[in-house]
Amino acid sequence: PPSPPPPPSPPPPIPPSPPPPPEPEPEPEDHTAWIISGVVVGVWFVLSYAGYYYYVNYYSKRDWSAEYKAYIARKKHAQRMKEYFKKEKEVKEKVSLIDAFKREQNRRKVLRWAKVNMGALRDRLRRGPPRVAPAPGGGLPRRPPAKLALPY
Image (cartoon, rainbow, N blue to C red; front, side, top):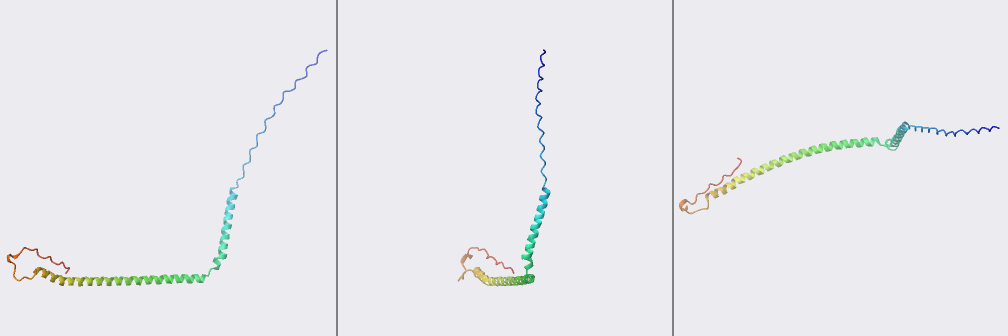
């Protein structure tokens, strides 16, 4: 009897299939527009509430007539002070003119006194000491006395 054929060899093992490529992560959503619009709305709410709070607690409770009266009083005071300073300046100018006049009068009085008294002194110096008789020989030559410089 013929021998049976050898059993067929088992098929080679099938290599495992490569894993599927990982799915790309989805891009995160862009929330920039929502953030900006939220900030704008939030700021608008905060400013609106601040304005409402100021109006209710301060602005609506102001006494407008008193403020207007104070304004008018400040204006009148400023006008009065302006006039006062103007008069004070005029008075100072008059006083300075009077002072200048008095100084000039005093200067002239001193010059008159100097002309009279210094002239007499000059004459005395010019004559020299009183003598009984003139000195023999005429003495030493002298420099003539300086003239008094007067403005007139």
